[in-house]
Length: 559
Image 1 (cartoon, rainbow, N blue to C red):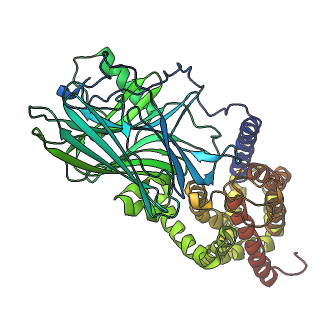
Image 2 (cartoon, helix red, strand yellow):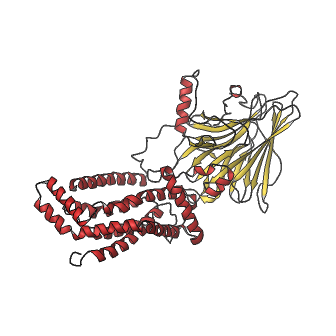
Image 3 (cartoon, rainbow, N blue to C red):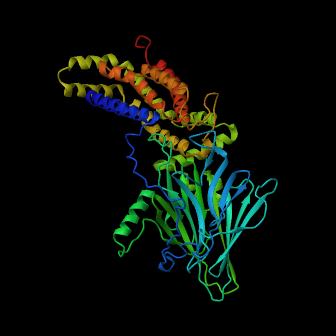
């Protein structure tokens, strides 16, 4: 058993060294050892997106561009400012080109606001809509004329941006409605047949994004950008740009071969989105209309996810209306739940969602009373400690008894020094006689590890805690302690805990046990400060509990 313990300690020690070296590389701007080498990306063209090809073959490739005979359209950017964001919409195609969140700072440069939609450098993030189903219909390459109206919300509760385009015998009117305090934009499309023959147009909605990795992502504090979608039948689905790239390559290599994408292709409900760390942009198409769902590569290193909805037969002089919603903002559970069923699932708690989600629910209620996420974490830690009190108390009693019998254990080791089998048999007999569980000291840690990992995901996923301060130097609980105060306090608490535990008879094990607090404290330099705060408070409460129990059980001469 001592050999096994020593092996485990050496493994933990080796893994800790590798982990620390990797984190130091990431901290100093070097690539992570665990991250794949970045692929060489081709430069995306200025207008990277293309009209989507829906599942219906008749729509494939339709409405590719403005007629060549038309004079070049001079586009302009219309900026709408509300109390929560600024949105830039291009009159060329009515594309959403830029969105700046006014209440959230950028994760890399806190002097700037968080951007979602953008088109700059190697970043492409666009919202596009248009028509397919017949040649030359208005799409996101068509010039739109903007109707006059206010561009700043001001004291009003809502404002609208209305723009029109007409070609191919169809007039398309886009109406964007913005409301106070709301990250939802109502997107209405009015399609009027201005020609002399019936038409059967289809409306597409799509989000376009580059395939570059997000900045500032590391193995310990991962970030991501990915297409996601939800249908009532298939529920939440998280895709990847890499997967779309592979599917596109497979289709090109086998153009005549039937292809089924790795996601649902038809639904009359749900939504699709570009999800990222803390934020999401999601289109919610008009419900109860069966639509095709597509993902595709639209340009070099640029991909789209979207839907195509039939509008039915439109006779001359008739107007049909389609109402969709676009949510673009923070991943806050309650507002997301109100927008569309399943949209709150973009707040990804990882594989421990079953623990993390109720954990956040409890913390949210505590926060509503305390008003500070740092004190909420402390109160939550005390609550967890009370829940696990019987288990940890039994464990500490077992460790205290083991401290009492340490002289007997040492004598057994000396007596059976040359016969490990007999030594282990004698040890197990001693444990049985003294009613000691040799693994009792590990139980509190093992039981709390799921809680610890789930709390990590809560901190990593909850935009509510992004930028949330605690005391003085802790200005963001989702980021590491800038002055390493909490990791040092953790090291001190772990050292005290080690001294309270029975000391291993093996000198090498004893040294390793003394070194482990330092190793884990170095690891905690890179952990979110809220997580380290939880562990420090947990250790302090454990020390108090262990000291009281040890004082009652261990004789003074043994201490």
